[in-house]
Length: 148
Image (tube, rainbow, N blue to C red; front, side, top):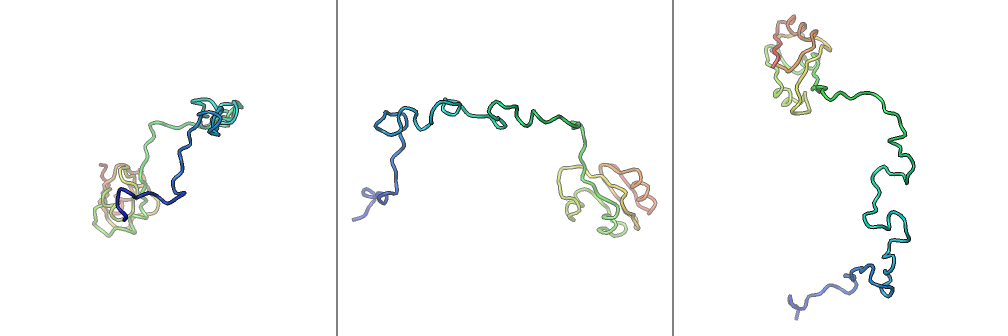
């Protein structure tokens, strides 16, 4: 009769735990499966990423180049050509509106309007930043450019 008290796995399904460092009779005594000497045989002997065995590592051999500005502002850039194609005359263009229409992909970044292309219809554009030329072109088409 099969019940919970006599359940057991199929023969060969479960192996015995490898008991390392328990004498020569176990087959895993002495060096405990770690080979002989060297950094990896020691306790805590792990190599950090980029370590090349004492040779000067690649990231230190290569020269440092350039400058990364920690105060750089990253914007979602939107061109006037895109606004002209996606919006009709008199509409209000705002960042959340741009995200909904799939013009802007990354949420949370400020939006900057760039003067690539032209606007042929009056639009009210509200954004975090405008290029000077973009602002002029929007106003020339009868629209308004408001900085949020």
